[in-house]
Length: 319
Figure 1 (cartoon, rainbow, N blue to C red):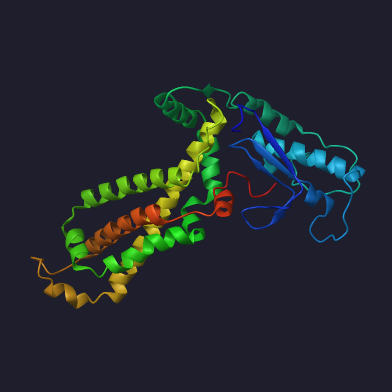
Figure 2: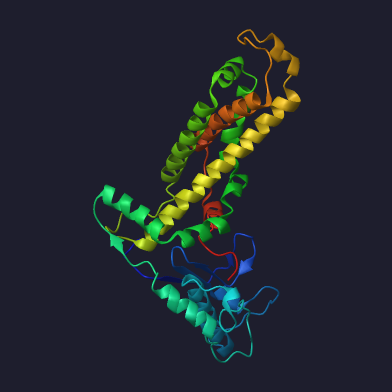
């Protein structure tokens, strides 16, 4: 994708592939980035089989062709539920000597989808490229939404220990700090919400670009629409992941406020005119502390390459 404005990238490898569910799979397909990966290792030695087949075996060649067309069907928007034929869940068939065809339902789906395949490109100017990314999202909302649903983005922080550690550690100190409670109690709900929103967006921008999660452009001046969709999808996944961090850290802080923090301590708080602290106050304080946690997590946290590939879910979980 980086070398030039290709319509489709097919990768053939002899290493085993695993899905984001940690299962060995024969291939992977990414409709959003239009990349197909085929593993010859799986074709030569499927799970549970010790003896290796040969690449020259007829069954291997026919199954490889079937798998390739099956994955390309996924890239073009077809799914297992669209019908039978080649879009049935792939399984190695030792007796296979032909490639199944796309049935009528799938062919109709592909003809309809062909009119909506991203083809435009942008080449100059940062403002123009930014507008091109926004326009690509507007043109293809269903593709991006499907990728977001498959990504389970709000749960992504659970697989990023560096990010979570950097987010949670300072908040465990802040929750027992008098200054933090003073600020949180005197904030308005609107200010706290605005602070949280802007901080989550800033953390997303910082994390996305410092971890280099967008498609690089060092070797080309052209960004195709599906490349723009990859960038938009990655950004939105990280945004939802930061929301997940906010909710998770906020839940921990709220639990500490309700269970660990001494309730009678607030009646002697010197800066309070009204010593009573209600549920809304506790939520606002938890949100304020969680917002700080999101910022520290984005600034000090990291991401593992393998985790990024698996959980950003640009590839479908099942071929």
